[in-house]
Length: 325
Image (cartoon, rainbow, N blue to C red):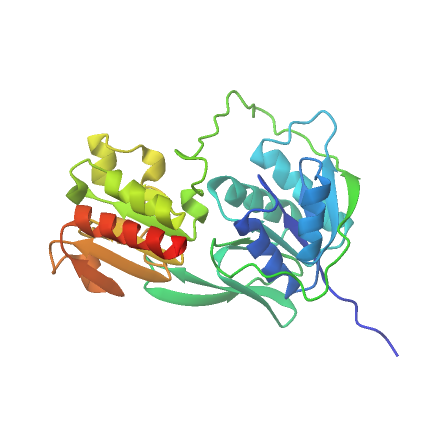
Protein backbone atom coordinates (compact mmCIF):
# COMPACT_ATOMS: atom_id res chain seq x y z
CA UNK A 1 0.00 0.00 0.00
CA UNK A 2 1.43 3.40 -1.00
CA UNK A 3 0.76 6.71 0.69
CA UNK A 4 0.19 9.69 -1.58
CA UNK A 5 2.51 12.55 -0.70
CA UNK A 6 1.06 15.99 -0.06
CA UNK A 7 2.27 18.50 -2.71
CA UNK A 8 4.62 21.26 -1.60
CA UNK A 9 3.77 24.86 -2.48
CA UNK A 10 6.46 27.55 -2.47
CA UNK A 11 5.25 31.11 -1.80
CA UNK A 12 7.81 33.85 -2.44
CA UNK A 13 7.16 36.80 -0.13
CA UNK A 14 8.46 40.20 -1.19
CA UNK A 15 8.19 43.34 0.92
CA UNK A 16 6.27 42.89 4.17
CA UNK A 17 5.70 39.11 4.46
CA UNK A 18 2.64 39.61 6.68
CA UNK A 19 0.70 42.14 4.60
CA UNK A 20 -2.74 41.16 3.33
CA UNK A 21 -1.65 40.30 -0.23
CA UNK A 22 1.01 37.88 1.05
CA UNK A 23 -1.42 36.19 3.43
CA UNK A 24 -3.94 35.85 0.58
CA UNK A 25 -1.36 33.97 -1.50
CA UNK A 26 -0.63 31.72 1.47
CA UNK A 27 -4.35 31.10 2.05
CA UNK A 28 -4.73 29.97 -1.58
CA UNK A 29 -1.54 27.94 -1.34
CA UNK A 30 -2.92 25.90 1.56
CA UNK A 31 -5.65 24.61 -0.76
CA UNK A 32 -2.95 23.03 -2.93
CA UNK A 33 -0.59 21.51 -0.35
CA UNK A 34 1.96 22.22 2.37
CA UNK A 35 3.14 25.84 2.19
CA UNK A 36 6.81 26.77 2.42
CA UNK A 37 7.65 30.50 2.32
CA UNK A 38 10.79 32.01 0.81
CA UNK A 39 12.10 35.50 1.56
CA UNK A 40 15.13 37.56 0.62
CA UNK A 41 15.46 39.00 4.13
CA UNK A 42 15.72 37.14 7.46
CA UNK A 43 12.22 36.86 8.98
CA UNK A 44 11.65 38.17 12.48
CA UNK A 45 10.19 35.99 15.20
CA UNK A 46 6.92 37.92 14.99
CA UNK A 47 6.80 37.33 11.22
CA UNK A 48 7.35 33.60 11.66
CA UNK A 49 4.64 33.48 14.30
CA UNK A 50 2.14 35.17 11.98
CA UNK A 51 3.07 32.98 9.02
CA UNK A 52 2.75 29.90 11.21
CA UNK A 53 -0.79 30.93 12.13
CA UNK A 54 -1.58 30.91 8.41
CA UNK A 55 -0.17 27.43 7.93
CA UNK A 56 3.38 28.05 6.72
CA UNK A 57 5.51 25.07 7.74
CA UNK A 58 8.94 26.55 6.90
CA UNK A 59 10.38 30.00 6.16
CA UNK A 60 13.48 29.86 4.00
CA UNK A 61 15.78 32.84 3.60
CA UNK A 62 17.39 32.73 0.17
CA UNK A 63 21.16 33.20 0.39
CA UNK A 64 22.75 34.16 -2.93
CA UNK A 65 26.12 35.11 -1.52
CA UNK A 66 27.46 38.33 -3.05
CA UNK A 67 24.87 38.39 -5.83
CA UNK A 68 22.33 41.23 -5.62
CA UNK A 69 18.88 39.80 -4.88
CA UNK A 70 17.11 43.05 -5.74
CA UNK A 71 17.18 42.34 -9.48
CA UNK A 72 14.02 40.50 -10.63
CA UNK A 73 16.02 38.40 -13.10
CA UNK A 74 18.25 37.20 -10.27
CA UNK A 75 15.39 36.69 -7.81
CA UNK A 76 13.60 34.62 -10.44
CA UNK A 77 16.62 32.32 -10.63
CA UNK A 78 16.71 32.04 -6.83
CA UNK A 79 13.00 31.24 -6.60
CA UNK A 80 13.36 28.59 -9.30
CA UNK A 81 16.33 27.04 -7.49
CA UNK A 82 14.35 26.97 -4.23
CA UNK A 83 11.38 25.33 -5.96
CA UNK A 84 13.66 22.60 -7.33
CA UNK A 85 15.38 22.11 -3.97
CA UNK A 86 12.12 21.49 -2.08
CA UNK A 87 10.43 19.81 -5.07
CA UNK A 88 7.55 22.31 -5.11
CA UNK A 89 4.58 21.52 -7.34
CA UNK A 90 3.47 25.16 -7.44
CA UNK A 91 5.20 28.51 -6.96
CA UNK A 92 3.02 31.46 -5.91
CA UNK A 93 3.77 35.18 -5.73
CA UNK A 94 1.80 38.33 -5.04
CA UNK A 95 0.95 40.47 -8.05
CA UNK A 96 2.90 43.62 -8.88
CA UNK A 97 5.07 44.81 -11.75
CA UNK A 98 8.16 43.44 -9.97
CA UNK A 99 6.73 40.09 -8.90
CA UNK A 100 5.26 39.45 -12.34
CA UNK A 101 8.76 39.84 -13.77
CA UNK A 102 10.16 37.56 -11.07
CA UNK A 103 7.47 34.99 -11.85
CA UNK A 104 8.30 35.07 -15.56
CA UNK A 105 11.99 34.46 -14.90
CA UNK A 106 11.21 31.69 -12.40
CA UNK A 107 8.87 29.98 -14.87
CA UNK A 108 11.54 30.22 -17.58
CA UNK A 109 14.20 28.57 -15.41
CA UNK A 110 11.78 25.89 -14.24
CA UNK A 111 10.43 25.37 -17.77
CA UNK A 112 7.03 25.74 -16.14
CA UNK A 113 3.69 27.20 -17.18
CA UNK A 114 2.80 30.66 -15.85
CA UNK A 115 -0.58 32.01 -14.71
CA UNK A 116 -0.83 35.78 -14.11
CA UNK A 117 -3.28 37.60 -11.81
CA UNK A 118 -5.41 34.59 -10.88
CA UNK A 119 -8.26 34.97 -8.41
CA UNK A 120 -8.46 31.30 -7.43
CA UNK A 121 -6.30 28.20 -7.72
CA UNK A 122 -6.90 24.47 -7.91
CA UNK A 123 -5.39 21.34 -9.41
CA UNK A 124 -6.74 20.12 -12.75
CA UNK A 125 -5.59 16.59 -13.59
CA UNK A 126 -2.73 17.17 -11.17
CA UNK A 127 -1.63 20.40 -12.87
CA UNK A 128 -1.87 23.96 -11.52
CA UNK A 129 -5.00 25.77 -12.73
CA UNK A 130 -6.58 29.11 -11.93
CA UNK A 131 -9.44 31.46 -12.74
CA UNK A 132 -8.97 35.05 -13.86
CA UNK A 133 -10.86 37.99 -15.34
CA UNK A 134 -9.59 39.40 -18.64
CA UNK A 135 -10.41 41.91 -21.40
CA UNK A 136 -11.25 44.75 -19.04
CA UNK A 137 -13.36 42.53 -16.80
CA UNK A 138 -15.67 41.33 -19.58
CA UNK A 139 -14.56 37.68 -19.61
CA UNK A 140 -14.03 35.15 -16.82
CA UNK A 141 -11.56 32.45 -17.84
CA UNK A 142 -10.11 29.28 -16.40
CA UNK A 143 -6.70 28.05 -17.49
CA UNK A 144 -4.25 25.34 -16.53
CA UNK A 145 -0.54 24.82 -17.13
CA UNK A 146 0.57 21.79 -19.09
CA UNK A 147 3.78 21.27 -17.13
CA UNK A 148 4.46 19.30 -13.96
CA UNK A 149 5.24 22.54 -12.10
CA UNK A 150 3.28 25.76 -12.31
CA UNK A 151 4.01 29.38 -11.37
CA UNK A 152 1.25 31.89 -10.59
CA UNK A 153 0.81 35.45 -9.37
CA UNK A 154 -2.25 36.02 -7.16
CA UNK A 155 -4.48 39.02 -7.81
CA UNK A 156 -4.85 41.28 -4.75
CA UNK A 157 -8.12 40.81 -2.81
CA UNK A 158 -8.74 37.48 -4.53
CA UNK A 159 -9.65 35.91 -1.19
CA UNK A 160 -10.01 36.96 2.41
CA UNK A 161 -6.87 35.84 4.31
CA UNK A 162 -7.80 33.11 6.78
CA UNK A 163 -5.63 31.54 9.49
CA UNK A 164 -5.09 27.82 9.12
CA UNK A 165 -7.36 25.45 11.07
CA UNK A 166 -4.15 23.97 12.49
CA UNK A 167 -1.30 26.49 12.90
CA UNK A 168 2.17 25.35 11.84
CA UNK A 169 5.58 26.01 13.37
CA UNK A 170 7.07 28.04 10.47
CA UNK A 171 10.55 26.68 11.13
CA UNK A 172 13.30 29.06 9.94
CA UNK A 173 16.01 27.98 7.56
CA UNK A 174 18.58 29.25 5.09
CA UNK A 175 18.72 27.97 1.53
CA UNK A 176 21.89 28.72 -0.39
CA UNK A 177 21.15 29.23 -4.07
CA UNK A 178 23.58 29.48 -6.97
CA UNK A 179 22.55 32.40 -9.16
CA UNK A 180 24.28 34.76 -11.56
CA UNK A 181 23.52 38.25 -12.77
CA UNK A 182 22.79 38.17 -16.53
CA UNK A 183 25.48 39.79 -18.66
CA UNK A 184 24.88 43.49 -19.24
CA UNK A 185 22.33 43.82 -16.42
CA UNK A 186 23.13 46.25 -13.61
CA UNK A 187 20.99 47.98 -11.01
CA UNK A 188 21.86 51.66 -11.33
CA UNK A 189 19.13 53.12 -9.14
CA UNK A 190 16.13 52.20 -7.06
CA UNK A 191 13.44 54.46 -5.62
CA UNK A 192 10.65 53.22 -3.35
CA UNK A 193 7.50 55.34 -3.55
CA UNK A 194 5.77 55.47 -0.20
CA UNK A 195 2.10 56.18 0.37
CA UNK A 196 1.11 59.80 0.98
CA UNK A 197 -0.10 58.76 4.41
CA UNK A 198 1.51 56.13 6.58
CA UNK A 199 -1.87 54.61 7.36
CA UNK A 200 -2.90 54.26 3.72
CA UNK A 201 -2.46 50.92 1.96
CA UNK A 202 -0.81 50.42 -1.40
CA UNK A 203 -3.15 51.32 -4.26
CA UNK A 204 -2.54 48.05 -6.12
CA UNK A 205 -3.30 45.90 -3.05
CA UNK A 206 -5.90 47.99 -1.20
CA UNK A 207 -9.18 46.35 -0.23
CA UNK A 208 -10.94 49.72 -0.57
CA UNK A 209 -10.12 52.42 -3.13
CA UNK A 210 -11.59 55.94 -3.24
CA UNK A 211 -10.83 57.58 -6.57
CA UNK A 212 -11.46 61.13 -7.70
CA UNK A 213 -11.74 62.33 -11.27
CA UNK A 214 -12.05 65.55 -13.20
CA UNK A 215 -15.22 66.36 -11.26
CA UNK A 216 -13.07 67.19 -8.22
CA UNK A 217 -11.66 70.21 -10.14
CA UNK A 218 -8.37 69.47 -8.40
CA UNK A 219 -9.77 69.54 -4.85
CA UNK A 220 -9.04 66.07 -3.46
CA UNK A 221 -9.76 66.97 0.19
CA UNK A 222 -13.19 65.22 0.20
CA UNK A 223 -11.61 62.16 -1.48
CA UNK A 224 -8.80 62.03 1.08
CA UNK A 225 -11.24 62.54 3.94
CA UNK A 226 -13.40 59.57 2.92
CA UNK A 227 -10.34 57.44 2.21
CA UNK A 228 -8.96 58.13 5.68
CA UNK A 229 -12.31 57.30 7.28
CA UNK A 230 -12.42 53.98 5.41
CA UNK A 231 -8.72 53.12 5.66
CA UNK A 232 -8.65 53.18 1.85
CA UNK A 233 -6.15 53.99 -0.86
CA UNK A 234 -6.60 57.06 -3.06
CA UNK A 235 -6.74 56.76 -6.83
CA UNK A 236 -7.40 59.02 -9.78
CA UNK A 237 -7.78 59.16 -13.55
CA UNK A 238 -5.37 59.90 -16.35
CA UNK A 239 -6.87 63.37 -16.91
CA UNK A 240 -6.14 64.34 -13.30
CA UNK A 241 -2.57 63.11 -13.58
CA UNK A 242 -2.12 65.09 -16.80
CA UNK A 243 -3.41 68.18 -14.94
CA UNK A 244 -0.81 67.57 -12.23
CA UNK A 245 -3.38 67.18 -9.46
CA UNK A 246 -1.97 63.81 -8.37
CA UNK A 247 1.10 61.78 -9.32
CA UNK A 248 1.12 58.93 -11.83
CA UNK A 249 1.40 56.41 -8.97
CA UNK A 250 -2.25 57.16 -8.16
CA UNK A 251 -3.56 56.64 -11.70
CA UNK A 252 -6.05 53.80 -12.07
CA UNK A 253 -6.47 52.41 -15.56
CA UNK A 254 -4.92 50.44 -18.39
CA UNK A 255 -2.01 52.90 -18.56
CA UNK A 256 -1.74 53.15 -14.77
CA UNK A 257 -2.43 50.75 -11.91
CA UNK A 258 -4.91 47.93 -12.36
CA UNK A 259 -6.88 47.47 -9.15
CA UNK A 260 -9.40 44.91 -7.93
CA UNK A 261 -10.50 46.07 -4.46
CA UNK A 262 -13.48 44.69 -2.62
CA UNK A 263 -14.97 48.21 -2.71
CA UNK A 264 -14.27 50.86 -5.34
CA UNK A 265 -15.71 54.37 -4.97
CA UNK A 266 -15.37 56.60 -8.01
CA UNK A 267 -16.21 60.26 -7.44
CA UNK A 268 -16.47 62.73 -10.29
CA UNK A 269 -15.31 60.09 -12.76
CA UNK A 270 -17.19 59.76 -16.03
CA UNK A 271 -15.78 56.32 -16.81
CA UNK A 272 -13.53 56.35 -19.87
CA UNK A 273 -12.80 52.86 -21.27
CA UNK A 274 -9.13 52.96 -20.27
CA UNK A 275 -10.13 53.77 -16.67
CA UNK A 276 -12.90 51.17 -16.47
CA UNK A 277 -10.50 48.57 -17.84
CA UNK A 278 -8.29 49.14 -14.80
CA UNK A 279 -10.96 48.77 -12.09
CA UNK A 280 -13.81 46.68 -13.51
CA UNK A 281 -12.72 43.60 -11.53
CA UNK A 282 -13.67 45.38 -8.27
CA UNK A 283 -16.06 43.51 -6.01
CA UNK A 284 -18.55 46.37 -5.42
CA UNK A 285 -18.50 49.59 -7.44
CA UNK A 286 -19.97 52.83 -6.09
CA UNK A 287 -20.21 55.95 -8.27
CA UNK A 288 -20.76 59.54 -7.15
CA UNK A 289 -21.49 61.96 -9.99
CA UNK A 290 -23.74 64.83 -10.97
CA UNK A 291 -24.32 63.11 -14.33
CA UNK A 292 -26.79 60.24 -13.98
CA UNK A 293 -25.87 58.95 -17.45
CA UNK A 294 -22.09 58.77 -16.94
CA UNK A 295 -20.72 55.32 -17.96
CA UNK A 296 -19.36 54.64 -14.45
CA UNK A 297 -22.75 55.47 -12.93
CA UNK A 298 -24.50 53.09 -15.30
CA UNK A 299 -22.14 50.19 -14.54
CA UNK A 300 -22.01 50.81 -10.76
CA UNK A 301 -23.63 48.52 -8.21
CA UNK A 302 -24.71 51.63 -6.29
CA UNK A 303 -24.75 55.23 -7.46
CA UNK A 304 -25.30 58.60 -5.84
CA UNK A 305 -26.24 61.46 -8.15
CA UNK A 306 -25.10 64.64 -6.49
CA UNK A 307 -22.24 66.96 -5.63
CA UNK A 308 -19.24 64.81 -4.72
CA UNK A 309 -17.84 67.27 -2.16
CA UNK A 310 -20.94 67.13 0.03
CA UNK A 311 -21.62 63.43 -0.58
CA UNK A 312 -18.10 62.30 0.33
CA UNK A 313 -17.84 64.64 3.30
CA UNK A 314 -21.21 63.51 4.67
CA UNK A 315 -20.26 59.86 4.13
CA UNK A 316 -16.95 60.30 5.96
CA UNK A 317 -18.73 62.01 8.86
CA UNK A 318 -21.32 59.23 9.07
CA UNK A 319 -18.62 56.54 9.02
CA UNK A 320 -16.64 58.24 11.78
CA UNK A 321 -19.81 58.65 13.89
CA UNK A 322 -20.71 54.99 13.36
CA UNK A 323 -17.28 53.77 14.36
CA UNK A 324 -17.14 56.13 17.28
CA UNK A 325 -20.46 54.75 18.50
